Image (cartoon, rainbow, N blue to C red):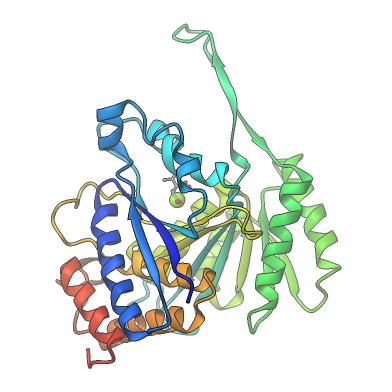
Length: 358
Ligand code: IPM
Ligand code: MG
């Protein structure tokens, strides 16, 4: 029985609180599945580390993470430090350094979770947003000249490479093919952004010819927001550029009930490097330290992590436990209208994993 080695980066704010919950729950999953072996090593990187050492992670941080089977990440962001510094210093450095080009963001209305859209319940909203995670608007290309002068210029360049677009398209088509509806919607802004986004359209059409069993359509990102709100049943898998999918996935999470539920996988599909799993909610410093963060996004992310490691029954057991707790509705977090603390939510999911009534 091989042990999966997991690097844990709790990071900032509520990241540490929900990652602690995730490790406890993974412990319960291991007890239930004697063939599952996980080991955890924690790295204290993030904004406090920056205050102590002048960088978000050590210079050889990536080298130290390489060789792990997966990374379990909390959040990064601090009210007293510039966001671009903390993000580029840790999370984006890992995503780019490990070529985690496929960012996968499921959003689904689960039983027991109120959907903010009238008349929409389980089965009506079941999406996966696939976000290009290595280039596009987040390529980091650009610069500033004439700093501090009235003539200052800032250039922020979106970079779309044919290779980068092809690999995310292929990934999204494969994912769509694996789902019952086999449907893929490509989101761009190719009416206004006439270079990179037109390349997206062309490569989408080219890839579609190889996946004739997947039905396809295209949307402009502005129109997509209204379709998500007004016709949630019409969507299945969605593929979009880094920034567009960043925005759409927050909307998707809110429409599925709460940002606190939503998980992410940052995947290097070829497995040359470890992939990274995290809730999408961020460091939530307004509620940090109060013990009330919703751990479900982190727990669902742990299920994605198990799935990526090939531990399908364990992943299914964990997701099933989450679904059971939410459906029962007795223990609900504040963002879903309840009063349960992080610890109470965690205990409920652990009970469900153990097969007890919740
Ligand atoms: C997300 C977040 C990040 C992103 C931030 C924290 C850099 O919003 O995971 O969606 O934009 O990628
Ligand atoms: Mg985001």
